[in-house]
Length: 412
Image 1 (cartoon, rainbow, N blue to C red):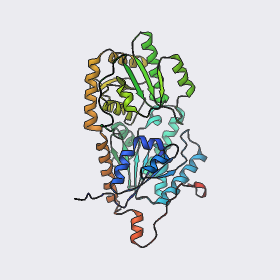
Image 2: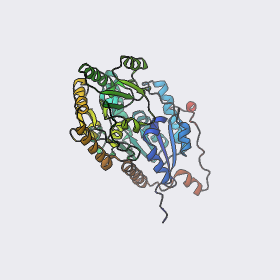
Image 3: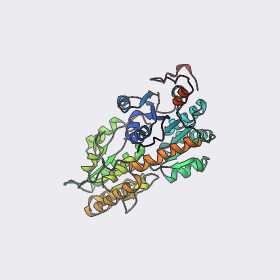
Image 4: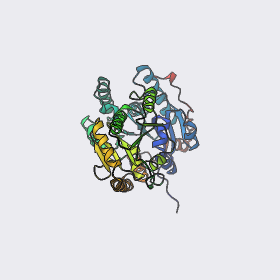
């Protein structure tokens, strides 16, 4: 019996800030959308992964996102490029991921008449983890933009945990337009349990090297443990980026010279990093639902994380790991020391972490929930076929998409 492809004839456009983020977090979902018949467009700041996206059969478009801050002139150029892209491809559904794509993509979608908009917040991050003047100003702007975007009944917001949902309701977003889908999922075959390696215990932190991921507190905890003479290696796996909270290469190099932590840089094989470690640690200030902890849990490694939104959804104190207060190096050192000295506790917590991932956070669960949402929203909007299919049926020529959106001739 032939499988009925539920998204046949639809054009779905994914708007994200970075091509590498799309590849690391969204590929399984987008592959599934294509298998259901969708034409897929990926609009992002294209750098090293453009060829990979094209090789998957998706259509890459370069959007000049600036993640170093908020600059009105550069952001106007970004918004113009997004609007040009939406008008060129005429998507049935736009899926915006993270703060700038959500805000700019929602406004551009209204202007372009996109039938359905799905906004995904991968966590409220810097906006809500920081109390700086800049963060408070950005929160105010984010609130206004969200309320404007929510004026359209065609919009749905995906959050990854219930605390983010409550925060958005508090900001004025109607609760019926918010959907909780827990994370971007984890491949439980690629990230599989393995026996602990012999030797000194290793705590692995897989993360972008950002201050608000708690990397500074983790380094200070490492210093405290070294002063106590505890045998534990702490390994930092990941690189920085243009984020305002990024830790400088000079600082990372200084920590490496100090020898208190191992600064490994980015890794192309995170599953192996966990297989060669004993503990997964992430002392972040706030998360949506951290993929690194999900992957560590899938590898049956016990977790150490901060008691903040997102982290505590997978790191459940005494069940899958140990929770500590945010920004508390002393408590973090104590939790790491406890696990480093108790192999049986590591085994028990790690085994349960794997069970929780399989039951609640596996890739196929997240993908199915998201595709079901697409189908439901398209049906509610009365979109039965993609714009290109409809045009051809009417005898008019299909739109010819741009290889790269050139924003110069249009203003937001």
